[in-house]
Image 1 (cartoon, one colour):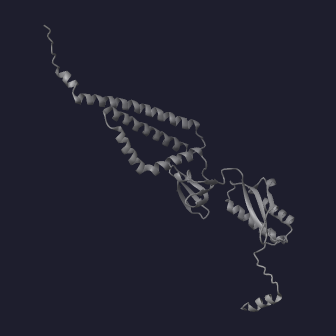
Image 2 (tube, helix red, strand yellow):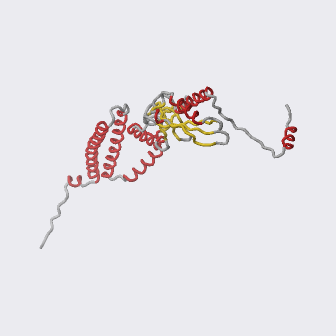
Image 3 (cartoon, helix red, strand yellow):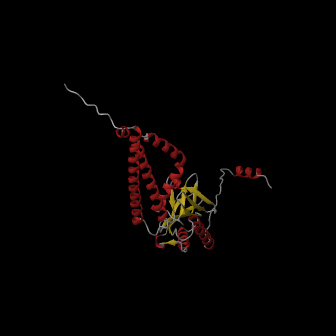
Length: 297
């Protein structure tokens, strides 16, 4: 006759099989995994920092800010993922936690984080730098010199000496025209002269006037030509090479050229016309009738 021996569990076995011990072991395992992942996170963040320092431009004085910020962002993102993995091991609903944190952070820090990331891109790529003259098409057009670039915003000093602070997100999402990032840019100046003018002489006077300025470079490439026949004047266009790093804004440079050309026109008896209205009468009687009806002051 077969008999079965029933082994009663010991107190130790009961204790080890209890829910508290099982959960505690999960917590200990999660802590070990988190600590291990934190070490890996620190190592990866350090690799990112060393790569930025190695490949970055040493002349960029913002490089320290850039690598520190990227290092911190990389490290803390990896830390968050490490804790998520630990929570998953313990049995928490990580998906719900991620959704809640993402929603909260998205609402609270969307613009701040966006501006910081945009600032990193601006400082690292150096698409424009301090002292550059730019025209920014934001809510309105801003033309001025860049005075300050930070992680979150950029400061522009406009022609009327106003200080404009623009979020970095704006700068990477709107058209920007640079005037000093290149060594040479082309500018255009327009003039109008009377139809009775000696066009060849006019072209020579304008060419000499434009090339008399030091901010005009590559003077042999300066062009002056007739561009249009308007209602009351001949339109002359000058195309010249301008040094955007000479310290002058383009509007001022063109203004100086206009003033110089106007003075040369006066010296050389070149007339600048103004709008006139000519009335022709088929009959002399109609002309005399109109004259009689003009009120005398």
